[in-house]
Image (cartoon, rainbow over all chains, first blue to last red):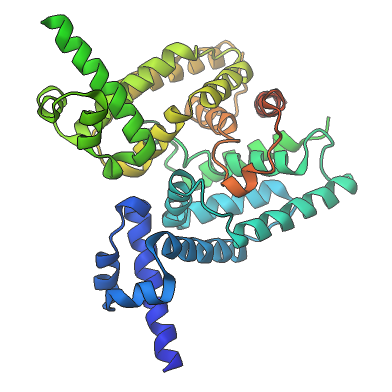
Length: 187
Length: 187
């Protein structure tokens, strides 16, 4: 019975992740999620609560997964940016969920998974700064903002500009890594 | 009569811009746009076509407006990034519309306003490169991607990280301008 419940939850979360990535929160239909998972709709409410709560559960799992997949290294931020770029390349749904989250849940309660991940990163950045491994001129949050933004360069553009982007994934990654290296160069 | 038609269109486009910025394309309700503009709903279809077409009209106007407000200068990209940052700070709806556009219209026809604006920028970047005003190592589209991404650093983060961002707008702008200056530094 426990195993069945776990399996049902997993199927629902997988179906919900696809539905939310495609349609966002307002656009997602709980009916479609239930049909796609072949699970009775009532189970969604019983396991996860309302649609916003289901989204938060899905997105928290995506964040945890993504943190595990993309190890953070405050002493090698250019390569971290490269790995983040890889992760966006390989998981376009993660990027879409993040964008929907920013557009549709700005007033939601902070998600513990994101708060914890940021805290770890900011602490490591401060340590690397204290050890002289990072330039003095940026605070940890400024470093994180710049590195994330650079890693997202090829994903935050309009499709019109994207059509002119280099076809080579290796080249796009190299541009990201190089830019972060220059941002962090010691004077 | 012509003046009345222009006034009605303007009221509808203003109401539509607010509705789309708030709710996106799928989430927007034509009923609410008509009610907010105090215009009969049938006029929307008659002037602009369906909801996707109305969005494209709204977003094209936003792009044109934004291009006029933020003069591009291929020979001073750090300050251009600063102006772009200012524009996002002062027009959060523009940023939201851009994000909805990327999420909800990726398969839509390219918008002429965006294509034209990109073409002008890429041509100017190539000229500045030819004149030795920009480093050889990046192509025009790579330069534009990096500069845009840096300018968006404070707007592409989760609200959780945003809560730790510097309160000072001047400081956030300075970080953007400094990062672009370093990305472009000659070797």
